Structure formats: C-alpha cells, structure tokens
Amino acid sequence: MRTVKVKLKNGIVVSGDEFDDNDFLKLKDIFKKWQNMNSDLNALKGRSLNVPDVFSEALFCLAFNAVRTNAEPGAHSYDCVIKDTGEGVQVKSASIPNDCTSFGPTSTWDLLYYADFAPNGYVDGNVWFYKIDSEDVYGLVLNQAKNETFADQQAQGRRPRFSIKSRIINAKGLQPVKKVSLL
Image (tube, rainbow, N blue to C red; front, side, top):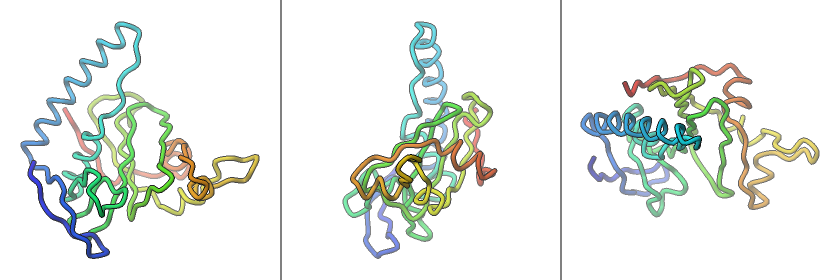
C-alpha cells in the first residue's frame, strides 16, 4: 500500500491509499484469521465479527481501480475515489445474509456499491459487488406509517437504516458487477 494523490470530480485533490497485489495477498491472509476468530467466538456462543472496513474498501479499490480516502478532509464522506473519473464512492458491506446497513445523516456519494461477503448465505470466501442506483436509495420509503423516505430521514439529521440486500438487490433482481475470491 502506498499513499497517492487523486483528483475528485470537483477538482479537489485528496490523498488516499492505493493497494497492490501484495496487499491482496495480505487481505487473503487476514481473511483466514478473521474466519478463525469467528469460529472461536462461535464456539463460545458469541457472534461473529462483521466485515472489517479494510476488507470491503481495499477489495473495492483493487477491483475497481480506486483509492481509499480514509476520511481525508475534502473527500466528503467518500470511502474511495475512482482514479480514472474522480467519482466518490461509498462502499457498504455485510457478512450476514440479511444486512442492516446504516448511512450517516450527511453521507454523500457519486457511486454506491454493496460488497456481499455472504452471497451464498454464509461467508465462504466469495465477495460479490453490486452497483446500487442512488435513486433507489433516496426514494426508498423507510417508515410506512409516515411515508418517510431515506432522503426525508437524512434531511431530519437521522441515520437511515435498511437492508440493501433485501430492499434493493433482491427486490430488483440485481446481478453482481464483479466477483472476487479470497480463497
């Protein structure tokens, strides 16, 4: 991993982490350790740990020619930036079959991706990436009684939460745009 500069679509230049094949090998090793830790936790009747951010963000960067921003000032709430286009990306992920994804009240993005670490119903080393249409998120009704949308909750300073997998991916029959194996 090395630190590089990348230009956002709006012209602002930010620093970020660029990953390479050696980092992918490290991620594969960490994945095995994460799985072993989860097995140990489960043996004690504990819950598995969720996906560490570095997995979803670093894998995204490797798969989509992007740089991880690490909350760099000026990078808004972007997790990553596509190097070729300067588009800011939010990467959401889960390692359970039915996620409950949370967004900050001021979360912004040019592109939204979901990294599914349990595409077959359980964590097996496969990670499927889905591109999520922003219109499907902002207009999604989250509170039926009040007819309140995702955008309404953000405007109220709240943290919208919902299952991307069930409410968008499965509901719309989306197919993964990229598949990665950590095996």
